[in-house]
Length: 235
Image (cartoon, rainbow, N blue to C red; front, side):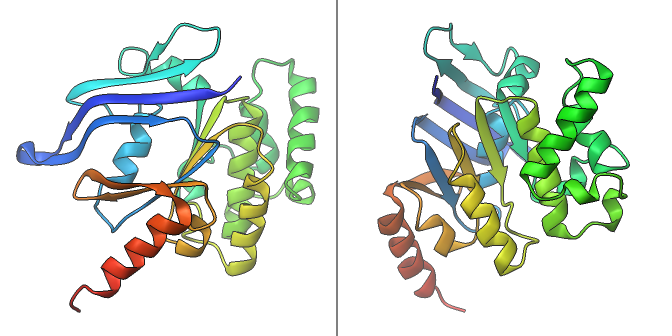
């Protein structure tokens, strides 16, 4: 089943009532969607709405899967988090356990302890970090931590994946590895990134600026327009 997210009349305000995000209508129904825009534009706020990490001051956020009743994210954020997996830009923000094996096993608490450990090892192997299973997460490189974080999130079995600027701390080879992996996902995902080369290869791109989606369309077209706009800005 494919999950679709729908935002309607969404407004998020910050300090002193400043509008951080204003989305009248937005349906996320593409297998691969990227979000681009300057720092502070509202990209992260948009992503965090999908699993209840942020709450709108007005409007609704719904998750819809075929054959199931719509899930109201605002009313049921914990249930939304079981459906939408979230990967942060800094994996250390979500790696809770001392070692990769323990962290992935934490996502598998529904299984008996021994089975959870064996399954966690399998997930780490899928991401080519099985040999690091017993190392401290603080001894891993940024790319290795990112792969462990992805393994932990996906082991929980989400129906949708959100990635908030996951390429920020990665070298070029690690970015290519991440992009190749995301291309194999069987669930839809939404990725915020400053890497325009990556974004340009996505079927759909949202350009967010000033808390609004100012352009929504094919990746190559939106990225080209964004490059032209930013290149014309005074230094």
